[in-house]
Amino acid sequence: MQLLKERNFSLFYFGSLVSYIGSMLCNFATSLFILDLSGSAIMMSLFLAYTTIIQLVLTPIMGAYSDRFSKKKCIVVCDFLFGITDLALAIILFMGVSNTYIWIAVIANATINTIVSSMAQPASSSIIPLIVHKDKLQKAYSLFSVLFDLTSIIGVISGATLYAIFGYKILLVINAATFIFASICELFIKVHEEKAEVKEKTDFMQEVKEGFTYLYERKELLAVAKCSVLINVCLTGIFAISIPYLINTHFDLHPMVLAVTSVGLSVGSIIGALIYGEKLIKKVSMAIQIGFTRLIFISIIFIVAYFLMQGGYIHWTLFSGLLFMGSLSLGFNGAYIQLPLNVSYAKRVDSNFMGRVMAIRSTLATVASPLAMVVAGILIEYLGVISVFISCTCLIVFAAIYTIRNKALKGLDD
View 1 (cartoon, one colour):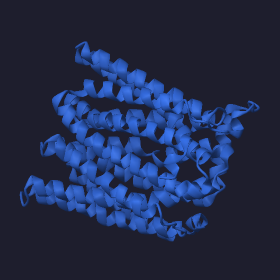
View 2 (cartoon, rainbow, N blue to C red; view 1 turned 90 degrees about the vertical axis):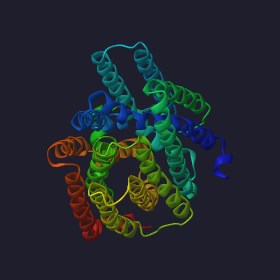
View 3 (tube, rainbow, N blue to C red; view 1 turned 135 degrees about the vertical axis):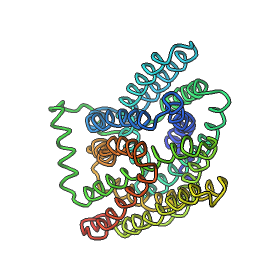
């Protein structure tokens, strides 16, 4: 509550609150819309892989670019652009054009939004340490974790309902309005940024290289990035491709089942954020090792749920409950790992490198996601959805062993 009384933080927080709700409404419906439009897991995976590749290529460059300018100006402009592009796509869909033009419009919208996101993401991650004192960073990240997950619950449930009743067009209009509102809120934030002053325009690619060098020389930060690559591959294969396909196409269940699964992830993360937001975790390396080991058992829950449902041993309601419990555990575990990790990063990264390092961290975490999406789609088409769950579980085991054996992670401990 003390943080929310601070004007700059509250403006950024409540602006983010509204835009997050709109994003969750729209993002949840996008996968369903692509599946309905194409009827193919491969097409959905290719679409998601396409946007991820763009983000991977541009995020390190845009992160360096954001370090040249005010973070406030970056997020204001980006949020306004998000609103305009989604509104444009909604208008095209309202016109009732053919599927060919719909595909062109959807891909154009995804391309523009991904380019804008590659700038918005590092700028948003970097602004929190600029408007919050270091002693309050863990509470600030906890609040944003709760914010993201609460809006996920609202957005996913509302998204499933509104998509079934009104379709994708209405969700796009709502999303556009939320981002425009957020950009207005962010206009009134006052941020004192050293680098916002006159800065010599050095070689641009040199700045990108400096960001990579800065991260590479800090072995503990690099070790976390390597672990994140493996885990993100697994979670992408499971949550972005396999579970939506499993629910929507394989078992032909109501979209609300997918919503309940997503809600479980958010509820677990909220519980974790509330518990660990006040508890200072000094042994960050231990938290990472325990968290990665827990992921092995969580992935087994999804495998067991599949076999029980596939064999006809349980009703779809119990199947939904098992997916919810698996997602709940995953969300709680994510908060257990991410909160101390974010604080550790914020304390160790120089403010002049913050945009670049956050961008590179995000890029490295998702570097293999496009390949994971395509591979997951192919595995589903030819070997069945269970092959993705088993493959991802094996990768999680490998990642857990890597974190236990990696001594560099101790550099994250306070």
